[in-house]
Each structure stands twice: as structure tokens, then as C-alpha cells.
Image (cartoon, rainbow, N blue to C red; front, side, top):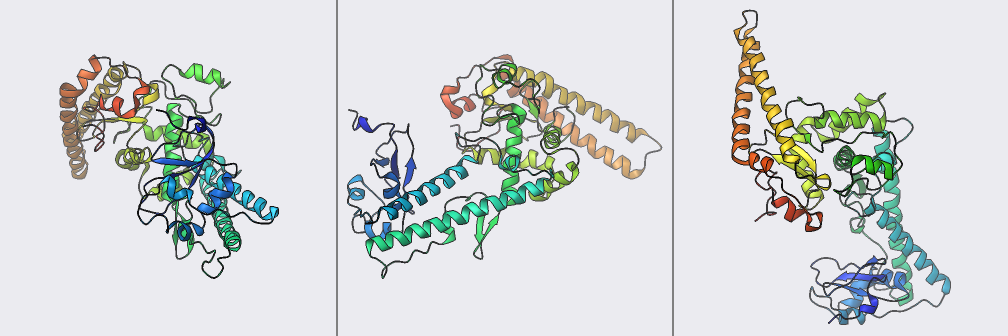
Length: 441
């Protein structure tokens, strides 16, 4: 039996029924449905009541009703609500609360995992200088101001509610900076100051760049560009009125991520192109150094070793970009799930896996010439021998991978349904995709 259906899709205040940490109440706009684990309050005074229940009065006034980790509807309903005598005070509380909601929503939407994500923050905040460092500094200044404004608002709301409830002798309005809930991924409090994590902010920029490469996003408009297998590149561009894209989408939806720079659409080369297009060529080298300094390693090492693990964490083990990966990860290539076509693995086999093997064989031949050359130095021959051994080892791995695993998927066109979700679809190809611990059983 459907209960309380008359409240479905209406704005509410929601909280988790079971919480081992700080109990938090969140504003839910229209078009959400509550359930037993995510309970909701419906009232005409949503902002005011949410502000009270997120204030320092919460613990003092809820503890008598709930001594456990469970916060039932009945317990929350006993929370005593007092309204101020002055309409001006009520209006001020509503305004401060709305500002807190706006700041928190803007921060949430700044990440690409939000439904309402528009563009990367470094793109949005870039300056006329076209220097990435200047965009980063502007980002820090912008969000530092938002962070401390949220902190100021929360303390002011505490002060107002303490006064309304007459609890000046029992409570103070002070809020530790650590309790401010925005920027938890991008910054941390060190010695009482907000310190930004440059590496994480640059990783978000790189993630967005990969999205632009695949056509999930576009430099020509905000929000999603392609997120439907039935929509092609030309159709998407036409939909948004784009005749000449600022950055061209990868045509075949396959981007190699390899130690060797053998392909025109190599991911490092594509990222460098993106950086030039988005921030200009004048400061390209300086911008690239800024990125690699933030990462603490070369761009290629980051893409080979770290990017996909970061993507898995960012999307909570539900990746939208899939990584074809041989057992030792000597061959890796990304594809975008929402542009998947049944023949993609056949194309990946012919155009990339087999072609990579061919290029490695040519590499062996060139280095064999160095070994056979009388003019080559000892160090040159030593380096050549090392390259030959490395290439042979990779070829052996890739030929076995192709024969034992990849060829099956290349020869059998397998369809997917996006409505089945990432887990179901990803696990269909578990034998040739990057292993995600705990995803496929």
C-alpha cells in the first residue's frame, strides 16, 4: 500500500533514519520521493525549521528523545519549534538559510557527478591572462569567500536561535571550521585555515577534459553534450547549434592510454590539445608545468597509473568511461559508455591492439639495427637491448590477451542497455576491462 502519496515530489526537509555521525537535515527541492530510510518533513516553513534542526540546538533538544543512532519520525516530530516574536527576525533567518542552501548547491553542482553540473570551475573562472595558475588562484579566492560566508551564516543562525530559545547560558554560537560541509574533497582545515588541495582541483580539470574529448561535455555550451547512445556527434552538435566545435570530439570513441606515444589520438596528446584550446597556446608550457607540478608526476604517468583509479573513486565504482586493459595493463584504452556501439571492441582490436603490436615490432626492428651497428656506443646498445626486451614482453602479453580474451568480444557484437546501469553493463565485459574490486561477482 502506498502511504502518504499526496506528499510525493513536494519540497521537504530530509534526514537519514540511521546515523552514526552528525545528524544532518537537507533541503530536497521538488521531484523527490521520501522513504523509510530517508524520512522527510513537509511544512510551509521549510527553511526556518531546517535551520533550527541544523543549528547547535539540535543536539541539546533531540538527545532526550533519541539516545541511539536511530532517528525515527516520531522522535523528530517531538522537536520543540519556537518562532521569533519579530517578523524581521524570521525573515532574516529565512534569508540566511536560503543563502546557505544556494552556496551548498553551487558547491555540489561544481562537480561533474552532479545532475546540474555545467562546466569545470577552472574553465568557468579562467582569467584574461589565460594562465592556469591564475584561474586556480581565482578559484581559491572565490570558494574561500563562499566557505567563510557559509561559516558566518551558520554562526549567525546559531546566535539567533539561542536567543529565541533563551539558551544563552547553555550554548554558544561558535562553529568549528571543520564542521562546514562544503569543499570536503577540495580543501581541508590546517592550523585554523582553509587550505586548498591543488592536486584534487587539477584532477577535476583533467576529468572534465576527458569528458570533452569523448563528447560528454563541450567547450561550446554548459551541461551535458552527448549522454545517449542514439545521439551521434553531428546530431548533438546540430542540437546545440554548433557548426565548428571549439574542440573536436574523438570520432571512434576509443582513446589509447599507453606508455608509448604511437597514436594520433593518444590521450596525452589529446589532453595537450585540449589545454591549448581551452587556455591558449601562449602559456601552454607554463600551464602544463603547473599541472604536472600539482600532480607530482608527468602527465603520461598520471594517465597510465592513476587516472582510472581516480575515475572509479569519483563515480563511486560506477565508471562512465570504461578502460580496456590487458592483464599487466601494457595495453589500455578508454571508451565512453554512453557512446558504446556493439562493434567497438572489433574496432579497438583492429585499429589499436593489433596496430600497437605492429608498432612494437617495428620498434624492435629499429633497436635491432642499433645492436647490429658498429657505430653505436655501448650505452646506446644497452638501451636498445632493454627496449627490445620490454617490447617483446608486451607483445607476448598482448597476443595472449587477444587470443584468450579479447578476440571473443571483438567477434561477438554485444549490445547494452543504458537503463540497466553501469554495474550490469560493465560486468558483461569484465574479462577485458579494468578490474574494479567488488563490482563484478
